[in-house]
Image 1 (tube, rainbow, N blue to C red):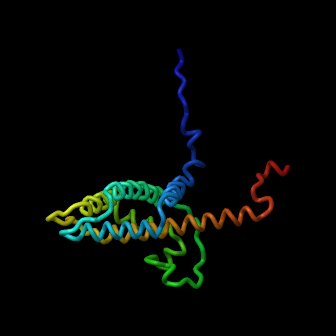
Image 2: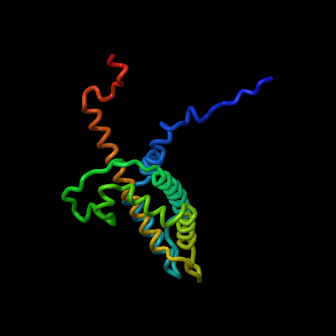
Image 3: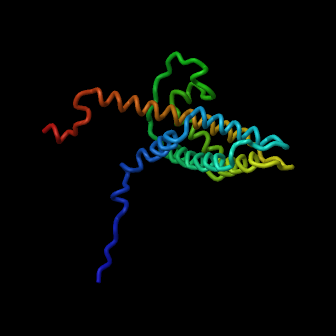
Length: 192
């Protein structure tokens, strides 16, 4: 009797993987606001580095945020691996420093640089260690502080949040422009 094998690669081929990281980012921002995420990360960081204080929020909120950030980090890693030249790259115009945030002008032009730099310096496991350590230390009063430098991963996460939001906004703008152009949604063989 011949065994039939299902080929899952054909269903989950390259077209599925093309925007997988962006889809995960979009899902993250459907449930988490950019400003609220940055404030929550900042609050967790502040309480984690204080010796005799604990965050006042419910631990379930911190746990939910921790899990959401872990999925965000994995999405960022996936985006960093997928290199596409000119991918949502825009020319720099007059941009105020408030809009730039922590991003440099080059990073604002090409937000993929933020993810590439972050995952060159730190692995997914190191980001996991950082976010789990910050959640752990923020929830209780401990004698010891985290043993590693936690400022750099924190800055990378803040920049990745800004860059991801920027990527998604530019993707929406690009899709809106496509929808406005007549005939852009039709395939070549449909017009024959």
